[in-house]
Amino acid sequence: MSYVEQMFSLPNTSAVVTGGAGVLPGVMARALVNAGATVTLWGRGTSHPVADAVEALKKETGISDRIFGVTVDTSDEDAVSAAFEETCIHAPVPNLLVNGVGGNKGKGDFTDIDVELFRQIVDMNLIGGLVVPTKIFASKWQQEKMAGSIINLASMSSYLPLSGVWAYNAAKSAVMNLTVATARAFAEHRIRVNGIAPGFFIGHQNRALLIKNDETGELTDRGQQVIDRTPFGRFGNFTDMEGATVFLASEQASGFITGVTIPVDGGYLTHNI
Ligand SMILES: NC(=O)c1ccc[n+]([C@@H]2O[C@H](COP(=O)([O-])OP(=O)(O)OC[C@H]3O[C@@H](n4cnc5c(N)ncnc54)[C@H](O)[C@@H]3O)[C@@H](O)[C@H]2O)c1
Image (cartoon, rainbow, N blue to C red):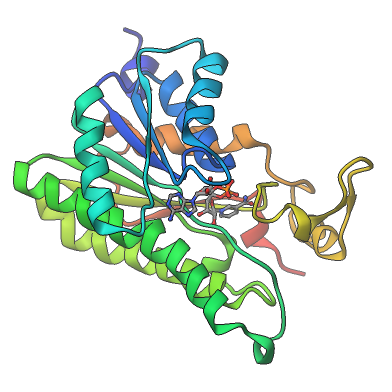
């Protein structure tokens, strides 16, 4: 094995990627598979069925014996516990959790907040997107005295709020806060917790906010503002997520790193005048 393979290949990693039928979690799953991990995609099976995502990933990678799927609502504790057991039937006991569930719905003035929708967005990004899976995985790992690793999905709005997306901002800043807090709490159990903060990638959740016309690629005003603020002058390409994913997943490469969130943002956070 070459030095690079030793550093970055993941033959002993069994990963669960929540929201695995989604755009960015799907890309992260592909990176993990290509680096040698066994990957189980978890998803709700409503708008993006997990079985379809599993088939697509098998086709894309040409690997079929290390990719599995489980349908689960990650905000439901009992269901997540059962999904963990179901995962263990076909895959080695998971030792990596990628908390990929999340997203935003709409945008508006604070005074027009729909409280029920606000709750749903916090629930998706924070409860299903982090709290419940983290609780279940960390409990299982601690019971079994197993080492483990967690990668959370933060956002540019974890650092400074984006306009009009109040619940998303609140939830994503909490994701970064909990990344640090759980890293501290779980370190003694040999559980690392890190995050990735993607800049702007065109996913299901934000397409309508950023792109006015899919055919011409014409941007909304907000889409143009994002590009103007991003020193690299473009949205993220999905492959941009792969390196940070494999790096944080690899015990050899990042085994002494915990509690950090890596921005993958084309310099968005460095913007100044
Ligand atoms: N796309 C971006 O530019 C961007 C930027 C920053 C952060 N992120 C974050 O990355 C993550 C993925 O984003 P994406 O754009 O790929 O979104 P996406 O909508 O493509 O993927 C999210 C997936 O999670 C699933 N899901 C939602 N709630 C669930 C639940 N309770 N149980 C199981 N599955 C559930 C959805 O069905 C979907 O398949 C999110 O946390 C998002 O906030 C995305």
